[in-house]
Length: 328
Image (tube, rainbow, N blue to C red; front, side, top):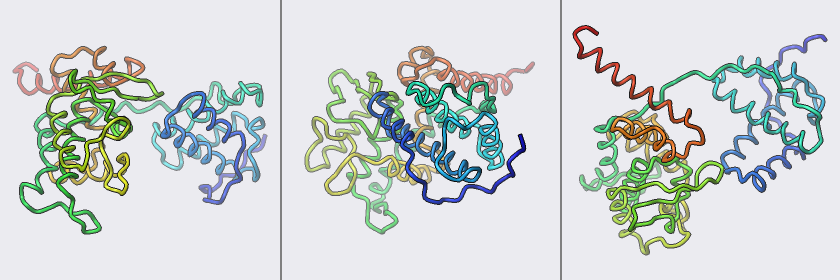
């Protein structure tokens, strides 16, 4: 079979709606109860493949006619586009799930992705903040109020005391509970058990778990709510946006505010909210928590996902040994 010529990156031209993809995404939402983030990522991955395929064979993708060699070509294209291994794995995870769906629906007899070798993901240790750095970050949101010089948004409007205290409560809650950004933004007032010091969290795959929340985080939430016209109740979000009428906080706003607080604390502003989750897990293990308990607290489906944090503590101990032992 003659090889198709190499093509340039797919241009951003409008694509005809693919009924199979729409059925698959609806299946993820209604039958698999997949999160909006999963559906968004899978839609992006499948649409991206559609665009690439259109440079090879114009028109609607015939999913039953795509062969393993076509996916090998796509894999080479992604490699030339300098995508990281994790990004490539995500795209093929979406494609594999899509083909499983097509097989169950009787659209295709088998998946052309079977036995397709992908590059292994790099083993990178997650970044985290030390306890001292974490303390500096937790104090950063209130610095403008102490200095009597309100923080300002790009538009020039001063950030209110309520927003400053909201940000403290957000950081305290992420660090106290080890939450993902989506889990934090989805917290409702009724999820807080004040007397027991517990939070009900809706995690990946809509799986529910209970995690402890410390008194500093609860006190920060109380301080934030005391500055609102009315404390949230029932299904209302714990952390509100500043829009009118207020709604749940958007992850993008949280990320933007975190960058400002990291810079104010003289820390790397490129750190993401997920690094606070890494800090939570690492500090727990450093203090002697067992791996299985940390797995349950983080909501990891598999213990191997949690084990990456043991490498962090091992590396820390190794550095301490090398620095201190005369025969290291």
